[in-house]
Amino acid sequence: MAVKRFIVLSDIHGDNQCTRSLGAALQFCEEFKPHIRVCGGDLFDARPLRMKASDDERRESMADDWGAGIKFLGDFRPHVLLLGNHDYRLYKHRDESSNGVVRDSCGEAIRDLENKCGRLKCQLFPYDARRGVYQMGPLKVVHGYFSGKYSAARHAETYGRCLFGHDHSVSEFRATALDIRHARGIGCLCKLDLGYDDRTPGKLRHENGFAYGWINDKTGAGDAFQARCVDGHWILPTGIKEY
Image (spheres, one colour):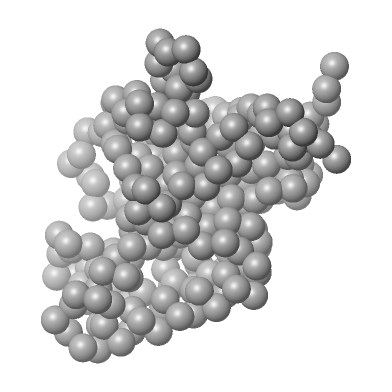
């Protein structure tokens, strides 16, 4: 079959997931039956490990956060997992924490994650601007390395035709260029109010959403469509047909 369907879900944030949105995305996935399933990163929230974590956050257990992220992997069964900046906190603390217990705990968590991906036959990409890029037909998928109102423009300039998460916003930009430089911010599947961003006006751009579409193995063509929650409702077509 030349035409293959794909879906990209991103920014679940573990126990900070939006249960309604994630449920809708997984239900759509079951009906859409994509050949390629991609998780765009920030599988976990990892609040206790963030650089500016409050004392209360540092005292939090990550058990629920970790369990929610791992459960999502089992439910979604992605073929590709792109680590995000929140997931990267595990690697950073494993390598750099001054607390030996934290280093050991993060190392054990990473081994569990990598083993889970191995059992799922899921390709794991690092959170890295060069190596953290998944090529899917004519499209690149990245977790995302820019944020703010110009993030789509900056991703288009850097990666060309791509899909990204990271800044939790639904956005797009196409550059004036002979080749296609079209970037889409696909939104998030987490809560729109995360607590630690209460005083960040940029969160007013945040939306629940994900991407899906098709690629043609023979011609190299492909396209992506945006799924988004509108007034609390998800209404999406599930069929792709060539005319």
